[in-house]
Length: 111
Image 1: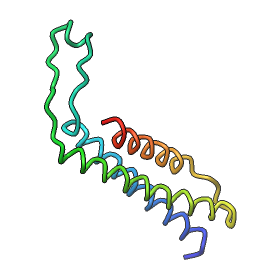
Image 2: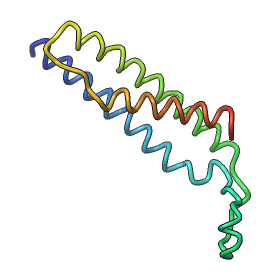
Image 3: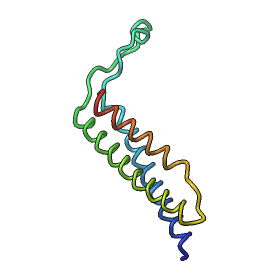
Image 4: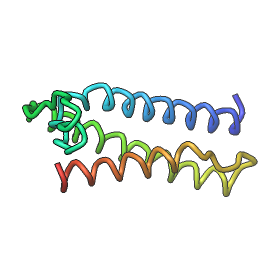
């Protein structure tokens, strides 16, 4: 296996693992925080869930930070590969890093 194919395989694997963690975090996000009691929902008679599971919120925060760390490593490796190989930039890597960083900061300081 030549160097370019190895770099492409490594970037693909890191991206798939990162996005899988992000999707798993979205699956547990439902029970991790209460619904926002917005006046529109209350005026239409919709039920609003006010209870939440703090242990799942902590798990969600850890998953998001692992995803952010993994995507940061992938971003740094992609920077190295783009400068030293024929492979170019991968758009999904900065997107995953930005999303996971924003979600981690939101959970840490808002929720």
